[in-house]
Length: 220
Image (tube, rainbow, N blue to C red; front, side, top):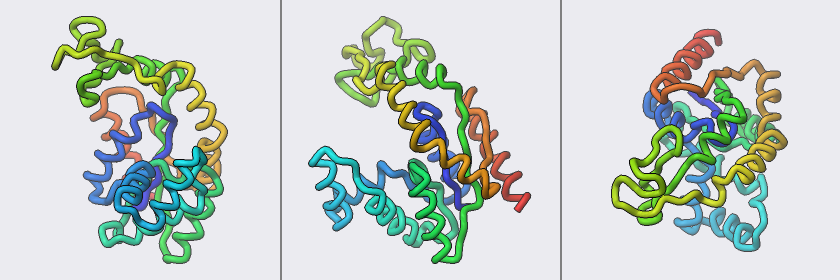
């Protein structure tokens, strides 16, 4: 299957993308991974992207699109892929449509992970990270440490990242509503959007997503 995964920050896109891609046996293609790979490998696109980033500027859509095009042309994506973080706006969605059209293929579904805004704020603003090891992550509500502010694993100090503050989360949500959310209507007009709730246990959300995609595929 060829799928686009959308949803606000904190909806669990990264977790679900990894699980769904493994089950569907297609590569998980995320914008973050594309940038990191191209920059670390010092590809021409990576060098170009880094030049914009070093200057404090946003990487232009055409560079992001070129990276996505290169990745989708790799052998492991021949039978499908799951896009996570791309397209990020309507112009990128239009460019993706044109790209796929030239290849004679098309998207089969756009999976929209729906979660209430206040839940997003609660999920992200409640995260606490260990200063000794960032892999040790806790949540003040869902997975609190035994001792407030202290990592259960190594005893390190737990802190809230600047980009996890409530103010920053709400700004990120504003950007999502302004720039990314419009692609849902864009794809709804094509009859591709499947919306599921992203509330509940991780396993349940994955099951929900797979069932929705199965129904969408069967309806084609």
